[in-house]
Length: 118
Image (cartoon, rainbow, N blue to C red; front, side, top):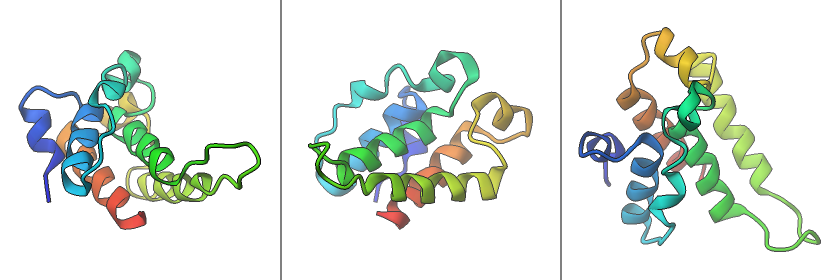
């Protein structure tokens, strides 16, 4: 299994690192570029890019193609967000940084939760 903080250290932002790792670990082809605008909390310290990318992967894997289908991805997204909040009390980038949470830590934690719930 790949470690997304490794890719972060290689110059990918947090969201791109999550997507790249997921693609390699599970033989998917989610465009890494989808995560490019998510880093640093969408560039303004909002929702953490790693968390946001994990939610996006949940949608990719468990999402629906028609409004007639049940949207089961919401259940998985809620599980992911609950585990993030339980661990860190926030999914907001600026709050995480103020609490001393490193990017590598939240990247790896959120990725492990993603793999666990899916």
